[in-house]
Length: 192
Image (cartoon, rainbow, N blue to C red):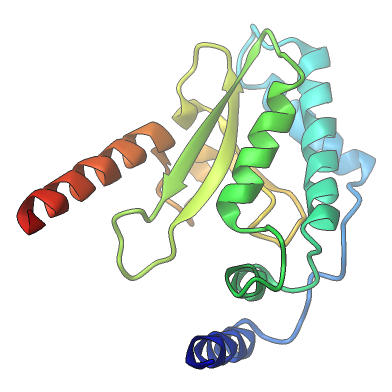
């Protein structure tokens, strides 16, 4: 009972801090939005197939909308996170969005594009850890790609070049996971 009350208090606090406005339900991308993302993906390099870039843009926007429906998004991201953590919603934490976006795009089996995962704030105790999917030209590193982040706007796809996304300092997911593993091992060694 005390745990449930603490969760409810957390939800009320987040609602207060996030404001009362909800995202307004699933967003359908305009043709101009899809075209702008496709143009940005094509610009990742001369080796990028224009058809793959256009398909990736269409799929990314459609997946963001589909996930917003699947995750039952009705609130701003932090409010929705609280509901997921309290068991009131099925999914919708940032890593859910990142994983599901990455895997849907992987289903396309692109030959000239590559997918990556990144995490920000993993070592910052004052900020919430955040995950995203990134698309790049095949062979390029994640930091040469484009962030595909539907969590940030509650189901409306946010995208930008990794280098221009000043809100987050992205680190490759595998590096973050290795750092976490080493930290757990060091903590276990101290306890044992």
